[in-house]
Image (cartoon, rainbow, N blue to C red; front, side, top):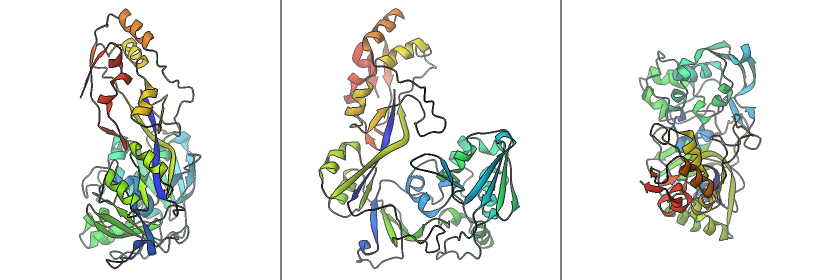
Length: 411
């Protein structure tokens, strides 16, 4: 059973589009005079998305502070240029050459003043740090780069070369059709080589991931752990000066606390509301609720190392006994659809011929009986919360195989 979830955003009706950041205001000033409050649950352990596997820096902050070589169109899910104006695929997918955008300034902050625009040196530094285990910056703040480590990219990239100030070339050890898509993730955000050199000179290398400098539309202004992140607009942003001077990302509340802040006007935007809160949000005329398909998948996984689940026929019989539609309503409140694949439809690798397993408990019983498994006992271990929705599997046993003659122990 797999679920394709939707991303959710609740906002006051005056919100017209994304924006973020600005200079510190007096304590009693109203941020709405020059920005808005974005409420989200999470914590910040680093301001470098390369150093984490998930969380607020990846989901919310990276797109404001940094840019990548490539981006993905949110509607067509096609690759589009960002810091790379164009690219070439050579050697049957083993070599990728990027032609970089000119006149892209880095952010000028209280801790760093750049003297040049973005160029190939920044790309070489960014990916050299990630891929090259002998790079002087590889072990700064730890040697872990979770996303790229999980892909074993350090063992896949043969070299990253600067051909000139506006051209870089990645040579892989073997062709990889997914390579460009990995560079379009926020984990591949470009950092400043000049800033790194200055920090090395000052023997303060650890600050690279704590006091960020990027080319994105907004830059870090102030941060209070567990309370808020204040961003101010980057006036030299290469796409044009952001319209909104600042945004405050409120980290201080979770769950119903964030919802209360939205309803009382303390928040202008509530990110990822729980599915159980949707009725409240839909019924309030002051709010606008935005939903669109997400890239996340939830699933039940069989432990194939343990009999009888090592038998594909048993697994298929159990899959027939899972009531996906009931799960859609009772756990996800209608904000998910049954997925036919481990990959969401938006993925470049999605198989359009994949089929959803039907719900047929009678057939499930018959197959298990034929396999001699009429008194099968299973243990289900699951998270209490999945992808921002409130999941209570113990209260929905009828949706799982245990509801049809199979004893199911929930943990």
